Length: 284
Image 1: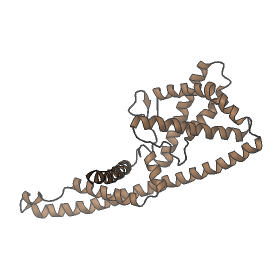
Image 2: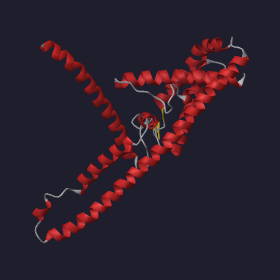
Image 3: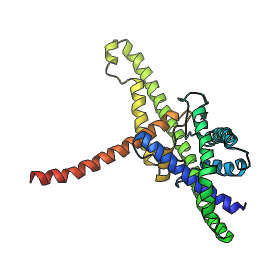
Image 4: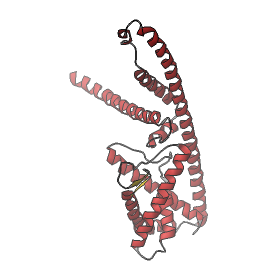
């Protein structure tokens, strides 16, 4: 099997995986959910899994062994991918912590069983048609297509990795700025408390608490940081589930929430502006 053909298969299955994930999650959330960490419409983990399924499981004797091989193989691939991306980028793109029989939130029994069935469907249902689609293409054309696709895919990976690195830098800087402001506020709070204890505790009622101050400063710093992000960085931030096991995981979650809230507010304003002219016509 030529490597160009394998890469074309990898890309096609990555696109199929993205379509499945996006449709499933959009229906589940009742809103558009663009899945995958990359900018383009593909999820590479599906492409890798499907190509390995075709290469390794096609020699297995029966459908049962294919199912179990795909179930175990998908668990290993999913766990390794989750661990590697979290170590590299401190970000999480799926989290099964709330599902039963999960391992560190990276894999779970129900999803592994589902991927076992998916591997069986790919090998016996999808791949015979997909291979017939690529078989008539001359090898020279396959090489050209794979080089073009590889260039686009590599550029996407590079841009996404750079955006993730920049997001981590921004989140860490935001956290440091908040901590510095809280430390300054805390010192001032202690000094004022010492001075006002002699005057009576009632004088402290009008003072803002440290918790309220921290919340206020966090909201302001989150807004400020979001304004410095470009479209690629906000796209990557939206696609992640969370920033797990890092000091700024809460800041990352707040930014994701702010992005979602901002998008909803924009849609509501657009709907309101569309209804306004209609209501003015009715009044006329």
